[in-house]
Amino acid sequence: MTACIIAFFITCCIKPAVTVIDEDNGSRVELQRGQILAVKLEAQLGTGYGWKVVSLSSILVLKGEPEQISEPEQKPGGKDYQTFKFTAENRGETELKLEYIEAWKKGAKPLKEYTITVIIK
Image (tube, rainbow, N blue to C red; front, side, top):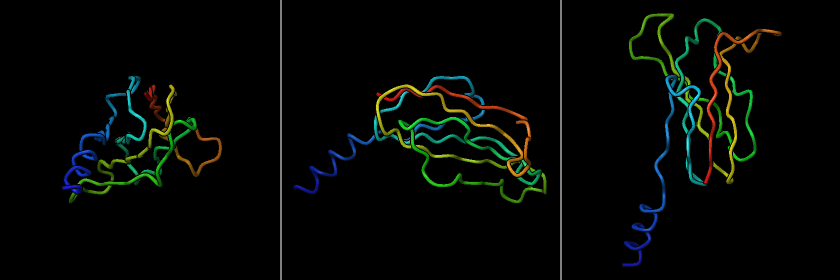
């Protein structure tokens, strides 16, 4: 009985992860403390370009390295995705900014930018 009550409590209290994609650039996202934000962006990793987090505050914490996913059976130069996962740690508002850049190249300018406003309640 106790296990059922605990399982019910956990299920009701944990909010599902929120995923944003390329089309959400410039938008606002609301999260609860402890909730996960996944940022899934299109990339062509074989070109040397990749997404890099360039602006992040302490209320939103990056969880590990980005996950890199390629389409099954794709040809070289095909579409890839990079997914960054963040945990909403503290209440507040912050801007999350990523750049699509050749990170290995000094002084490289970004080919694209991705910015969202994150509100943690």
